[in-house]
Length: 447
Image 1 (cartoon, rainbow, N blue to C red):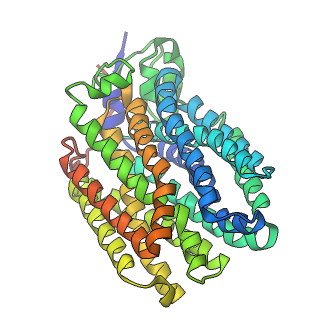
Image 2 (image 1 turned 180 degrees about the vertical axis):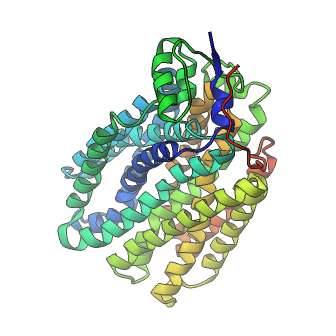
Image 3 (image 1 turned 45 degrees about the vertical axis):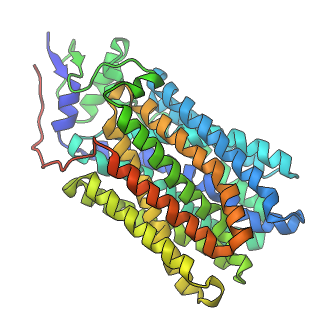
């Protein structure tokens, strides 16, 4: 009877076209996670006028979504490790799509807040499972790039949110924006239901699913004889539990990751929640304000992909610290100038630099978290770090509102510069960074 080491086969094997397509399928779902997550920030200026409410009235609504995402991230990671990444990811996307559709029928702040909370459960549950799934489809040397390519779709979705908002809000209103934003991910999930497979490393840990694993490996181009048994010798056998993340092997890095996620997501959401209203207050139009959201996100797409490529060559420590330092410099520059006296092009360029680097750090952090934890607790580890980070998202609406009301745009960007400085320090303290991985030849290993 043949015994196949699935971990070694995947880690040292080739990165086939089929594997790349699987990563793309996972990434597509995260585009709409990022889209739905940022629609409300773009719609707030319109809602303020239509409902005759001040900006501060929407802080609790924005916060309710982040509370849902915090809970969803923690629960979704554990569920993904127990019942599978695929089913949890698809279920999360369908749920936040359906709740986003319902948002289009809201007629008051309370209803809007309740719906955003439940949508947040799905938004939070999707990301840790997408990160785990992408990391377990591909060879080790390509893992940082694959995970980053998946999670970079969060700011890419945010970019799409800005573009859609600029087109839909002035003509069709905010209800049409949420209706479109909810229906598309539901349709995509249905299309991917039979196409997207479960993680091979997850399947290897469940003997009853070995026939499914054998079929998947054959589709990936590997020769798997009938009756093959499977092991994953490269991964630690650990019990699925949050407490395991604070065992001696992981404690320091878990704390460092939680701090990094908290302050980085605080920076991200101070920006995406309040940049549109900041720009309208400074005298720019609704379309320019929506383009400001696009600029804040689009730089992150290029920054994260570039960072992932550099990270493969230089490792995550030097790459992520350099991006964090650049984000601090960009925020400090924005704090030092008068936004209202600048041209729209100059403001958008500065937002693209600063938001781009913040999003690049946040996005590549998923690859780092997927590297720190073994398969048995990977989704739990990523989900816990993200859930803790969501507390930063909960704080962000109030921190941003306070900064704008007491010190305007300058104080808001001072807050971002300070929080990204803490991110730099936390990443510097993490021990198990992604090392430089030398290219390896494709290998099929049967023992």
